Image (cartoon, rainbow, N blue to C red; front, side, top):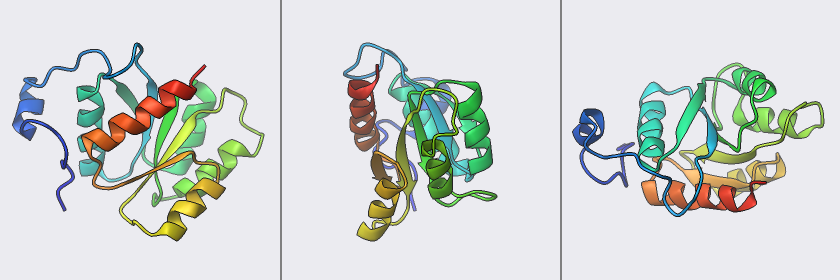
Length: 153
């Protein structure tokens, strides 16, 4: 599976810094993003796409770390892998939405290798606002983040 689908330029361009990360596309501000992804390759690929779009992300590798990070910082969006160790993305989303969270609630975008409609429905029912299929495509992530910017205070 090619995790770099949709990234313009080669991966070496990103690693060499030839793909500049300027202002976020189609927006006037940088989003504060938490990337919840336990797979190192997917994590690096998504961070490079975010950088290309003009955003930076903090990282969590499981749902427990997501809850801790969101209690410490106000994020605009959480990119949430569904299958992580210790606590999966669905449970982490439910816990963020159950009223015990003390900060501003971020928008949550589910990240899944599955394209099953029932999984998408589970994500929405758990409190997530959007769903992206892996491998993450630059254009899809750009559109999803633009929706987050439109909804941000």
